[in-house]
Amino acid sequence: MEDVIIIGAGACGCSLLYELSRYKVKTLLLEKENDVSVGTTKANSAIVHAGYDPEPGTKMAGYNVYGNALIEQLAADLDIPYKKIGSLVVGFDETDRKSIEKLLEKGNKNGVPGLKILEKEELFLMEPNLSKEAICALYAPSAGIIAPWELALAQAECAVKGGAKIEFNAEVISIEKKKDGFKVKTNKGDFESKFVVNAAGVNSDIVSRMIEPEFFTITPKSGEYFLLDTTEDGIVNTVVFPCPSVLGKGILVSPTVHGNIIVGPDSKISDKDYLGCTAKGLASIREGALRLIPSVNLRASIRNFSGVRADAGLEDFIVGQSKTAPGFFNMAGIKSPGLTSAPAIAKDVAKMLNEAGLEFKPNSNFVSKRKIKRFKHMSDAQKAQAIKENPAYGAIVCRCQTITEGEVIDALNRPIPPVSLDGIKRRCLTGMGRCQGGFCGPKVQSLISQMSKRKQKDIPLDREGMYIIISETKKGDL
Ligand SMILES: Cc1cc2nc3c(=O)[nH]c(=O)nc-3n(C[C@H](O)[C@H](O)[C@H](O)COP(=O)(O)OP(=O)(O)OC[C@H]3O[C@@H](n4cnc5c(N)ncnc54)[C@H](O)[C@@H]3O)c2cc1C
Image 1 (cartoon, rainbow, N blue to C red):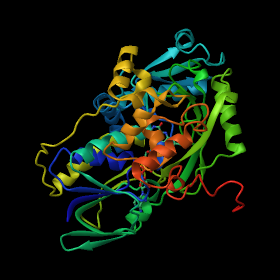
Image 2: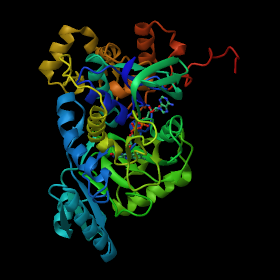
Image 3: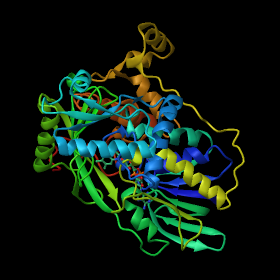
């Protein structure tokens, strides 16, 4: 019997797994996909929000501001790519100025540090490519950018090293209340635990209904993006937003931690597993981006993608113990700023579990830190040393991102070995550049095949079933 079963390996589930790994707690994370960060956590704006958007007094406001501070420390401890570059909410007229003043007031109430309104002169010094129509902006110096999938992955890797368990390809089908806990049924078998935490993202309503009466419904809302080539780096220096509307925070233009520019998202109701992009959606994003930054070059796009928000139609996240099924906890309806908030939500849920009877004795095997070798960022002397220690560091696999075979092999030996091309991409960035894996894809696939002893044709792009090699060419199978 486990102490805690967590359902879902996104930012929320993995933050809680890490938090609980501080203690001698038997924790099992069940994930329906084949890796960490395969849901919403991998596809979003990647902004560590400052915290002026949420309504003061909500859990969301507290989690956002606390999460922002926690992420700065986590990024340092766990070697997660992160930059505190600040954000701007830009105003174009007096109506916008009023909403910016309201955001400032909310931000001050929420305890966001360093907020101030910039007038034209100061604003253009910071962002020279901003539309000349801009008249002012709210500046939030504590906002940042992060590799979102790494936030979950880094925490999960440390937790697993510290003794936590993850079962992949294990979709939770039903939950049964037992005398001393729960029986959690999956397509891979049954598991028992004293406590269960629902961190199932867009499926959190379905999981909740397995054990408690319906009290919320997730409306999935997709957001599409352009990812621009690193040639566009420098077009903006901060995260640049328009004023928010009823649809959300609006279409932003921002640097990414990997030197690209991200532009988006829109917002529309979608399926829960939607991954697509539409001409209409992308056209609306183009329009929004050009209004902010007229010289942004959307022709330099190297990829379009989308992510799906878990919108419960509430002003707040759903976090806490079930009223009808004691021992069952929700981390549900975690829409934006859920990535930023996840570490703070996890700390709160860990405290609630403790108050509900989960014993916390320090785990002497707790792994609080992680360090990743990144060839591209090494000095010449460090590169020479890395190649001397392991000649695989002398073989470049991904030319766009300068990723070596050594890094791919190291990734395959990490505590949660990747099983797909995108699994390697999330760990080493292969396929993140201009050619989008056209050059490195077959090599990476072959390395996974060699190390995992699986046939190359069985290595998927990402989720199980997303196969790349379907048949031999010219054999006429198709
Ligand atoms: C377009 C967009 C932009 C965003 N921008 C930002 C931003 O800039 N900053 C920010 O802070 N937040 C942002 N967010 C929000 C943020 O991405 C999410 O709040 C966060 O990633 C949610 O994490 P999660 O762990 O709750 O869900 P997920 O990452 O979706 O994880 C849930 C996991 O549960 C698994 N699962 C589901 N059902 C089952 C089942 N039955 N059994 C087992 N496993 C199951 C899924 O496979 C998935 O891996 C954005 C979201 C979107 C969509």
